[in-house]
Length: 588
Image (tube, rainbow, N blue to C red; front, top):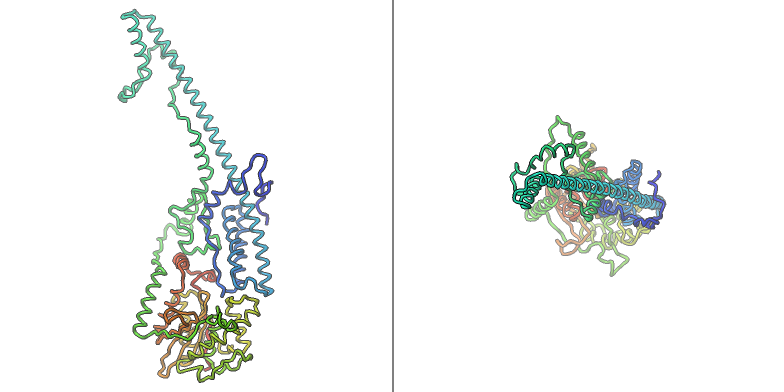
């Protein structure tokens, strides 16, 4: 696809006619576009496969090419900058960006080449914008020049007609005084002249009727029959006012961005405009009106009433509600926070060999595997991956023991982390995508593949999506599968959310009830800065804990995003609400 042709001069150079620097004529236009349409580069989720982000970048590239084809320079400029920022800032921040995997290398090189092409295209767009703005300014200067010439001409005509009227008045006064009898000498002549002049120029404080000049004598009417009425005097515009008017008009397309009465970017769902140019803040009042009219006429039939939308609940309100519900369950002894003896990364400085920093993707499935099938962990192919303790200390009547969890965090997880990172060519503390960890654990006979139940995910704040996980934990299989319930069997899940992985285990009790534990390897202030084991003593408290855990993980900027955007399955990889869970159960 051909980009807009660039001017002959090199970027930033000056021609013989003192051409301004590259980007200067269109600076106000571009700054206004960026102000209304541009956001900071997105931070990618390392637990999401990077190839999905490369695919999203290709979609943005296709949109950039389409905007160029349509000649939409404003849209192409914005979407081109988004692609460039995403490719040069967001993508390199992903832990898998420098992976030696041949497929990822191919995707990376293609993206880098595309970024260079788009950057060149954006530079040429700026050049074309400069030319457009210069043409607008020249056209405005020409309009002002012609307007000034017209005003000067009208002024000169007015002055000429004034001179003619004054001359006619003098002639009238002279002829009148010579044909009359002198009574009172020169004073009478002077009074007569003044009276004639007063008839031509009435007093300013006269009544409305007196402002109409008196009719001249009949002979004067015949002499001045073809003389048109005097035009009102016109003030000559000041030079500085002309320049301001010229500048305002030349950049009016920029200053008139549709901001009044329209929904700002990222405030009305669904926008997801961190990458995609759904609605560009155009720089023309006419375009804004057309957009508003087309939206009104096409999307809402005239005969149909507007749908009544229920007000959305702010995420901060949800956070407060979930926090109150959690505390209520704690007070009623339905939820218990248990302090573990370590946390991930605790040995990073004292024993680097056992550094488990960012090892949650390994720690969580190890906890699940040990819980549902403690005998299987003693069958690992490599000795360093085996549990050091016997099965009597590995489990208790409440499932996996705290001692076993501590050992997983401090001893078992670090060798696996080092092995997987080395295999994938990742940095020392890089987060690992769950599927890569699962493949390794299955190959090493640590995670039994035949115990896998299924996966679920979606919007963690949506009750329907979260209930799917709860049901799988309760019944031990996917909801849509017809299978015998395994309510009395142990179930475990690895929950991936907000670049962190936690373990969820179901503990069947002898009386037929079940406990649900959420095990988090990160240090928590609720348990004195150690890893935590949050125990829920029924399903209702388990759901309360999940809602609190989910809502408490959002930053301020993520809360603003959630309030501004409805959930969209097609954009889940860019949504902070997305979660995924993998579930296993013991053999029936």
